[in-house]
Image 1 (cartoon, rainbow, N blue to C red):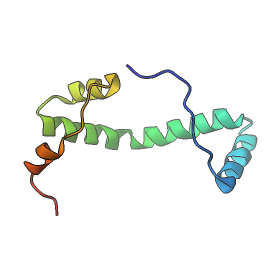
Image 2: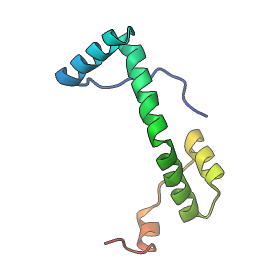
Image 3: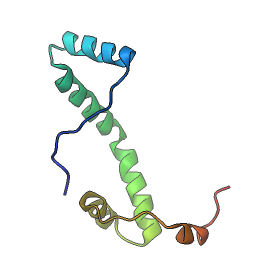
Length: 92
């Protein structure tokens, strides 16, 4: 299922790195711990929207949301091909 390897984040840039350093100092945490906390908080904030999007993708494929969720986590989900997109209504 989910990959439990350590997540590597590209450099934040000077300004955001400074903000993270200051935020971690204020909260008496390491930068890594504070970054993890901030990422988790953002994901919690977006959780319902992520689930809505998975539901949309599942309906488009004619499968259940649970199946789509599982396929994404196991790496078995596939993106819609250009040929399949051509058969879809155009959003333009």
